[in-house]
Image 1: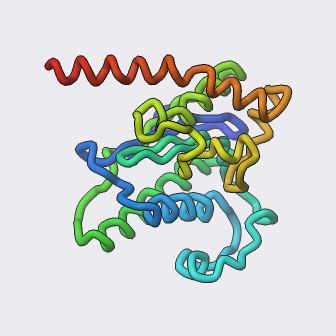
Image 2: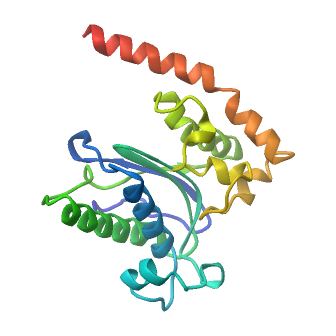
Length: 214
C-alpha cells in the first residue's frame, strides 16, 4: 500500500475503489464474491475474534456486538473491480481493513486459481465525502454500477451490491441509517436511485460506441 500524505479521519466517510491488475477479473463466481464480502465483514471488527478460517467454517461469532474499526455504508463488487463506501471509526481503521482484506483475498484467489503475484492494481483509491449531497450521489453511483455496465437489466437481480439492503430486501453488512436518514423512506431512496438508470445506460452505450470506433 502506498503511503497516504493525508490520513483518513475518524467519523469521516470515503469512497474506496480498486480494480484487478491489468484490468483482470477478480471475481469469477458467486463463491468469490461471497468470500470477499465475508472477509470484509471480518476485518472491519476490532478486538479478539476467532481465526479467519474458523470464522468462515463456523460463523458463531456475534458480529452485531463486536466493536468496529470501520463501518460499511455501501458496496458494489463488479467482475474486475470493487467500490466501497466506508466510515472510519478508529485511527487507521480504513487502511488496516483494506490492507488485510486485499492480502487475504489475494492469497485465497492465487491459491484457488494457481497463480502468483499481485491481484489488485496497486493500492486502493480513496475520495473523501464532504457533503450529504455528495454522499447520496456516490451511493447511487455505486449501486447503479452493474446495471449501467449492462451486466443486468433489473437492478434488483444483482446480489453483490448493498442496494437490496437499502430497500429492505435482505440483511447484510451495511449500516444504512446514515444515508436513509437523508430520505423520507426506503421507497424514496429507491426512486432516487432508479431515476438515473436510463441516463447512466445511455452514457455507457456512447462510451462503448466510441471505443469500438477507435
